[in-house]
Structure formats: structure tokens, C-alpha cells
Length: 60
Image (cartoon, rainbow, N blue to C red):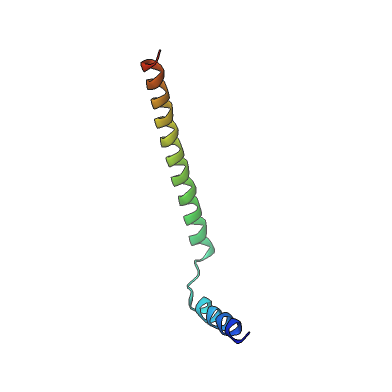
């Protein structure tokens, strides 16, 4: 039981040291992740569509 309490105390001490982002920074990073995800999704969708059309031409 003592090791668990020690672990929790150490974890709490480390969490106090964390520099948490502001609400504005969090909103900016969230928007950036959404834009990046949509960009990757569009790119992969375009590649998939292109390869599908290519395979349709080859195997007609």
C-alpha cells in the first residue's frame, strides 16, 4: 500500500510541473489538427479514387 501512495504523490508532484496550454492555444492546436486531418483525408481519398479508376481501365 505504501508504494501506491508514494506513486500517487510522485505523480501529483510531476503534474504540478506541467505547463498547461491556454484555452486559446488549445483552440488553435485543435483547429490545426482538424485541418491537417481533413487535408490528409482528401489526399488519401483522391489517391484511392485515382487508383480505382486506373485499375478499372487496366482490367476492363
